[in-house]
Length: 383
Image 1: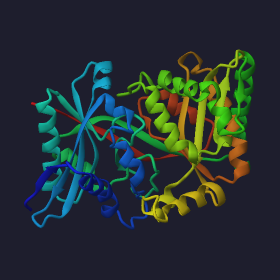
Image 2: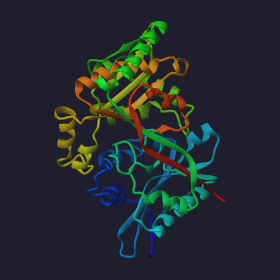
Image 3: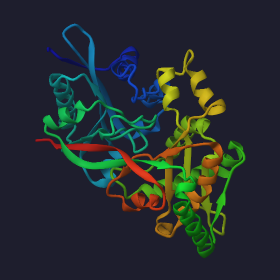
Image 4: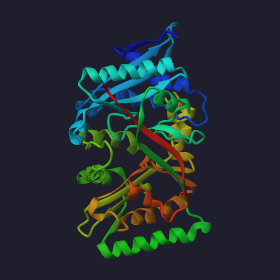
């Protein structure tokens, strides 16, 4: 196959870049399409604060008939490179048909792009920041994806490895079953640990009645300060600035039921830990075909306000370092579990957690869980 790679220059080409994922996975039972309107903002420098410190170009692969057969984003996160003292370019938002000429042409383009900018390695799939989808699925192809993670066909890793890429690090995702009578003993341990931790360190749960209360006195930014501090040592993380926080709040807060937001405060009423979940939007996005308009909004609104999913997507769980390994996570889940039971959820989906993050892996010790997905970040040294 004759493959032509073109850098995106127009808004029409960007729209084609976004929708290629939907076309490639149309009707797939486990893939969740990219959220079209959200990605338009993600790639818009006027709306995505990460593009203040990230450099990026986007490429489409065409066959000899002019049909789109692949896509990839080439990214440099200068803030992350400075933080971690590396010279790395990233590949992200990669999709391609099952043809090695196509995948090789896309990866060669990213590699050449990185070399031209003095980079020494290529890593990915990664987005602009840690809160973008990252990691190529290497196990769990028969599991429903989430709106904030990547789904890909099983042939993807084979193509990437054939192009000379090796494992950099893996993430795992867990299915966490909401405790029933069968698992009451395990969940009861959470409540005991939570009670001990709360009394020993003078901690308590803070709940919010409405968004106005959450935003009062810039409280929501104080919650994200916990995320920035807790996630700072993790692979590739770069601190979220105020504009980025506002962006994520605007994107996700409309979908969050505040009952599923648990903030732990100390005796001075300062937030020291948080956990937040939302009803899964995966099925709704499939029905909406990844677009809000003209009718996709109905499926999303129906899930949020009328007929919620029986799955919780755990978006973020973060504890300040000085409170980690002190049972604080148990306070979060002891608050969430009865609420999830009352709301009728069957299980929660964890976001990807680094395999090397033992503290994160130990969060679920007393609950009935299973690792049902695994994803990988690949790397290749540029010669």
